Amino acid sequence: MHPEGSPGQGALPHGLPQIGHTLGGKYQIVRLLGEGGMAFVYEAAHQRLQQRVAIKVLTPEFARDPELVSRFEREARAVARLRTKHVARVMDVDTTPEGVPYIVMEFLEGRDLDAELGARTRLPLGESIDYVLQACAGMLEAHGMGIVHRDLKPANLFLADEREGNGRVVKVLDFGISKVVGESTRLTGAGAVMGTVMYMSPEQLRAQPNVDTRADIWGLGVILYELIAGRPPWEGHSHQIAAAIVGQAPPDIRTFVPVPDAVAAALVTMLQRDPARRFPSVREVIAALAPFAPPGSIGAGVAEQVALGQSGSRARLMQLPQRTIPMSSRPSELEAAVAAARAARGQGSYTAPISRPAPAVVDPGPRSAPPPLSEGGRSRTRLMLIFAVTIGIVFAAGVVLIAVSVYKPLRLQPPPPPMTAEDAAPSAHASAEPPPIVSAPPADSRPVITAAPPSTGTVDRSSSSRDKGPSATVPGTGSKKGLDGGAGSTRASPPLPAPPTSTNPTHL
Image: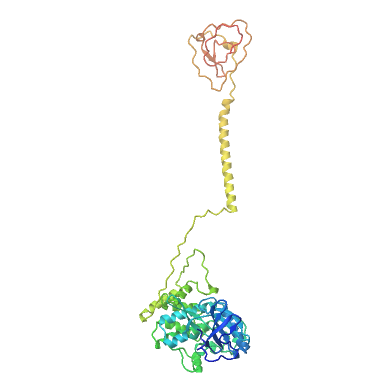
């Protein structure tokens, strides 16, 4: 299950948990899975949850070294912070009754890449890139949290039988010598050489104190080289390998196996002795290798997620605005890698199509009401309303004034003065012709009733109005008066027929 080696034979060393023992009152030891230089790995069963777990116990001799105990606890803290599926999950940490620390992890079924290489010698290009891309996904989250593994090798990449799509899930193991960037500790100080020599970067072999995430990029490059070529870049004893790493460039992989130029160039960049000349981050490694991942593989899915800014790195997860389609004005790094892969097709390259997400159809939703006016807008609206009302009032007042000025003279015209006796005297030249017809006064002119002066005799009204003479106009009055009209008559129209003779001194 874990890369610590073959299961131990015979009795276990004193101080280690024995088969059938229970740790922490809940983990019953089932069997020994493997052992390594620093720890033993057991299969155990959680008695209450009935769940299989893996327990990694530090060896008793190393448990007496405070520095190694601190490093062991460092692994537990580092891995417990990670949530990606490409790192083995830590569930608990504690110590045995003898004071030996142990870590409880998820139980994995499968085998590591070192065992896979031993059984198959070398792997196809697409499968090798698939596994390395998955390891990059796990390290992407670790690097985002400031954790540097510093001991990446095939034995620490476990092929779990958790099938998804067309392959197995790769999980990164053994953060025992990991370094947390910015954490002060003398475990990683100058002079401390940590890791397996074959996969160590030049700065690690020189025991430089400023080892960063680019050391893991070197380790991934050596792993990819070995998976494809079936052999590591260097061979020999440990000191010979160390000298070659520090002083020589790795041999071109195309001398051992044909690969596309883009893959060979990516390996050369990953294995640069100067860290400044390597890929600056794991993201660039993913972009360079993505075009060669098998379609539908887990590694291809990892590359697509990273290209969209949605990788497993919680620290660098891109939050896209709602209803926003990501667009770019220039080709991305992944597109550039695809172009390079297409250029290398003539040399047997395996190009994986990179699917682009279809543009999201944005539902506009129900039409919303217009936003309310601001204070300034409301003020302008009120001023315009007041102005319109004022104009209306002024216009109406003007119309009223014009109507009054036209109607008032007609309304205030004085009535005609009453006729006198002289006006009523018959004229010597009275004509026998009937008086002309004069139009009636305005409808609103009412006859004025005046009292006649005292009569001195009987008024002769026997004559008909047809015998009266023509009417005459009184200067200044505009009214017609009959020449023979009776005293006090004010009628401007032709006189009506005379009533019968009466002695009544007044008349209407």
